[in-house]
Figure 1 (cartoon, rainbow, N blue to C red):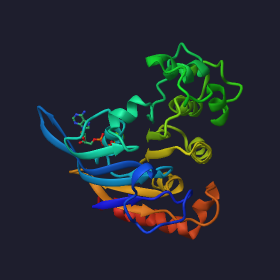
Figure 2 (cartoon, rainbow, N blue to C red):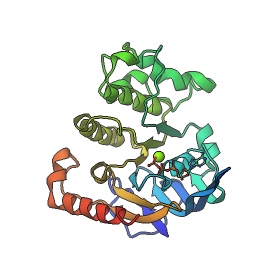
Figure 3 (cartoon, rainbow, N blue to C red):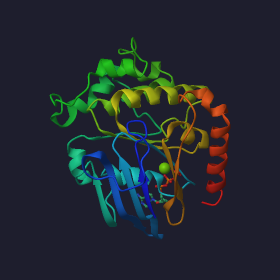
Length: 275
Ligand SMILES: Nc1ncnc2c1ncn2[C@@H]1O[C@H](COP(=O)(O)OP(=O)(O)OP(=O)(O)O)[C@@H](O)[C@H]1O
Ligand SMILES: [Mg+2]
């Protein structure tokens, strides 16, 4: 199945035609990933076609094992596809990774405990000689952007789980990536903190213009954050549906109480039940 991810905030809704050239952040054609272990071969992804326009926010939903993390990892050049072709910002994923075009945020913030919040954010600039790259962002400004102004010198053990994830987001953005892969980044947080971070992430997205692929198990989070929700089915992992999100007014938390949101969440749930 071919699906199109069109950036709706930056450009008016368009008829689905394959985005081309500089406007395409991710272009997957027939991407298949198989893992072979002593227990046999697993097809984590099968024939995934996906075009993501630069600046989009795409959320990924699907049952455990349907290949969500694998898709993010293949885009980020952490694993290679077994078959198919994939370009990231017009180049091979390895080229995009070397240019530091791809940031990654995991469920666990994985901060270094002996470094302060600011020192954790600056870490990617210290490895691989990236300190003087023109695309780098100011670490202090990033901490302020994620709501942590004044916490620069705090150590991870002094921060809450939500604050640690904010640091992880700032760290992922410090090299000025054009793409941000987020794999269940708020999955371990309480609901109120998660809600707050959801709103804040939309602000970060608007201010940075970064293209985001965001994995979640929450239907509500997927519907609230995404311009489109990519539903994956399991065994083998494959695209089930790309659902456009059209909600009235501003994307703020109360939108979740609108009829449109409730209907969308109902649709996502019904499709998920068959994945
Ligand atoms: N490195 C690996 N070696 C072998 N099998 C793997 C590897 N990584 C993933 N798999 C398998 O590929 C399939 C997809 O895994 P993946 O982690 O992408 O799923 P997921 O959708 O992210 O699941 P979850 O929601 O539980 O995080 C699973 O069957 C998993 O066991
Ligand atoms: Mg996963």
